Length: 569
Image 1 (spheres, rainbow, N blue to C red):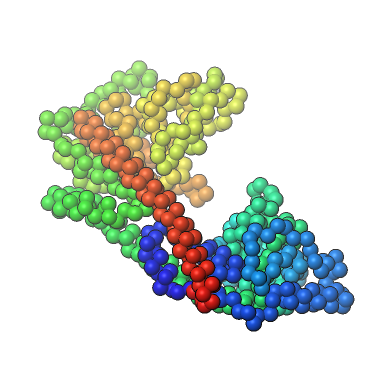
Image 2: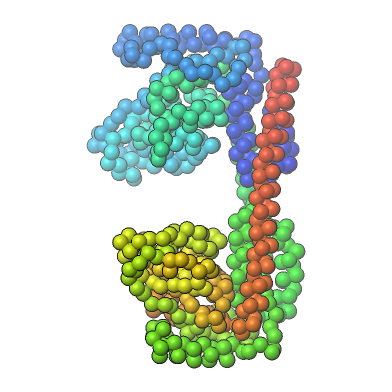
């Protein structure tokens, strides 16, 4: 196959993340169909090759090296397509020793030998990601010994397509099967055939089990295997290696291009954030960003970062206009303090100890804004032991990507978990203090019936109508707030921030009227992000379809023409 043709093809579909993965698959599929290399009339036919293999098996049986129960011919499932005349279909178990590895107890193993785990094999490419000795892994269970030249096949989750030819002796876990070819068969060609789409589909269709599906031995033995002449096997391996090397180079080029675009995207947005405080620089950077971001944003995950930047700009006073007629935030804070004092006297809220002092504000805010500690301007609603049916909200009830409630559930008191204690109402914001970096944050927007109880993993934030819940939600998802929480969180497996530490975290407070303008502007920009995200997703789908169409039509027609013309592609 002409390398220049593949480069031209990739130029048309190069932005598609799946393009090179699909191209690798098609190369393998063409290889096992005899469409990748030129067929030679002087080649010994696959039928003659099969007879030699059967003779070898018969000799091994007579000398006792092979069990007679393995048989010569095995029953084969229906072949999926027609092969060239010099090839033949044969049951996999007829030409291979399936599960040829020798089981060894851990105390009998050579500690310096190679121990292969399934995770060491890269799916799709069959590349060995790392080589680790048995001593380094110190396994306790029984392992299988394999020989150099064996095909190591991941029978567990066969759709992952993990196949490797061993280049030295070693051991593997039992989720890897050692397939040992008889003479006159190239192990490298066998690996190509086992990684082809048709074999992957066959193995997946015949895999048993739900959580850990695996290819059953009887189905593996009867799997149809395309057998070419030996000389053709070697030509195919050479051509596939050449094309896969080219795919590796193309993938490296694509990743380099993606990394460059990613760095440009983030540096552009970071430059915008860093210019906050210098109005002239901010305006100049903002104009450049508006022009650059649509060009640099090509992936859905980049839109996620764009959303975060919008939140950061919103709480720094850079999204909505300041109005000198707005009530200053200092007056708003006084009103909040007076309201909380009245509620405290009536016993409607609890006393919360706050030091009321922010040593160093995280960043500069507009002059009519004020910094406050989060529990200065919000309250929780206390706790209760549920005695009647209730709507329960825990972290699983939140779509953390969108920051919305999706799956609240109604529970009976006798089914209440011990964490179901905190009272919440419509309009409250809830923030998970357990693993807070997951951003399990949401607004209880609807009036839920029966009444709501949330997990003690949450902080409940009621802004009393003076700090808008949507504005609080925006602040909680900003970079600066996330970084502050990280400073205070404690623990390893389930890091969390204490309520007393959470209470002191700073929050920038704009005038109430400006809060409304900020929320409206953020909603408007988030809607545009939704549209951009949907557009990128649609484009990726259409490009993926284009990839399949181009490769099917162009490569197959080219190979067919070349085969008829009697020369290599």
